[in-house]
Amino acid sequence: VLYIENQVFSIEKESNDKSLIVISKYAFALYAVYKFLSNTNPPKVLIADDDAISIKLIETILEGEFCEVESVLNGKDALDKILNGYIQGEPYDYIYIDNKMPIINGSDVMRHIREYELDNGIERGVYAISTTGEVLDEFTNQLYDLYIGKPFKKEDVISALQRR
Image (tube, rainbow, N blue to C red; front, side, top):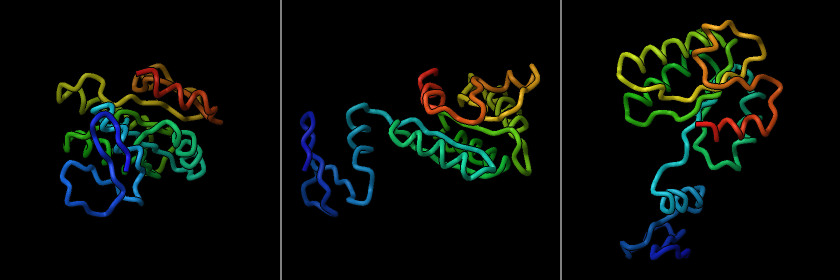
């Protein structure tokens, strides 16, 4: 049992005491504590890259930054997840996105997202971090909020979360 600011948290599976917030022993317990203390959800992050090693690297770096992280391996899945997030009222806060991905490249994903935001009165919703290793043209650069490039540096990946 954990007691914080007049709230009791328990790792029991069930409790008859309705004042307890039950935390599954298989869940990340600090998620409930963070949500309670900050009265908000952790930042929602999507990593879109066709390279599983790059995804794992960013996930590992973000582990200690208390984010809700999801990943996809192609641009179509990235576009679908981001649009569904908006539609369901649970948009992503950040997207780390590579440009060279199968089906739809990262720049085309961001072009669709920025058009969706504009058409729906959303003021630059998702904070887009380009993780591509190439120099992008000026128009394409405007689709992104930040460029960190590969190979990733831990401090660059983390500092991107603090720029918004």
